[in-house]
Image (tube, rainbow, N blue to C red; front, side, top):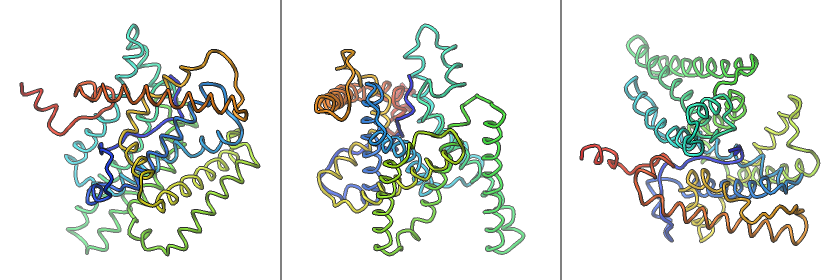
Length: 371
């Protein structure tokens, strides 16, 4: 169940609509479109990987963008979302995240290993790559932010009785960063000591992207006021920089700290370029389709890779041949159709929707419990 190349769960579901107004006051069409584009990259990457068609150019670009982009969007949504205001608030918000992320994480382990569920769960907890690693890693990154927000809230309430508003706010921000950096340092220490529980290396790898997204969400008004010329230039420069880096270097080589930093920089360029490109994409069928997919990223994520090799009869293909391109395209289409059919069927049953995807309609679980 190796699926590091896959993605991030949506907060809610939106039916595809021809009207942009459906997103006003609720969620951003651009954000959902970014998630939709990211899951398409994930699917394309899995077709190449599972059929042993990786190359040093196309796959390099896909690999360095797909997961960092999902993580960054997740951080952004956390940044613009509700802030923890107290201990009870902390438990309630984190509990909802745990249900949404960890229910499918554990259920899929049991579903795929029904004969040895307990030992399989233990194995995955010490090597998240063996399961839906993204869900656990995302939960840990989110929990770190909420824990720091709890400290920030406590410091703000404590100092508000003894100092003016500006001073108490300064203490609150200091408390946030003190706790967050302490948690980040602990994650780094885990990796240095070789601890494997919950794969801290994954948390460390994606922490910068989540934090950047979170800070962007907190400063969204400032970012919005940047001159459009600056944003367009940043978009073009980022995409061009990524293409040049992929053409010149092997971005999958992270054998040294310098090479890892180079890959992280390429990922940042890709995330920035794709995000701005979709921001400037005009409202139309393509953007609405991507936004529609963005409402089902978790469903697609947990299912699609199981069907990436349906058409493979053991023959090796080269991506840069007509036969290889046609095979990759056909595999992508067949995988997509099977995935879509399963999603449509399973989401008709509330229990499957909850166990497989961590989704539930408001009040649905309570109504069943009351019966």
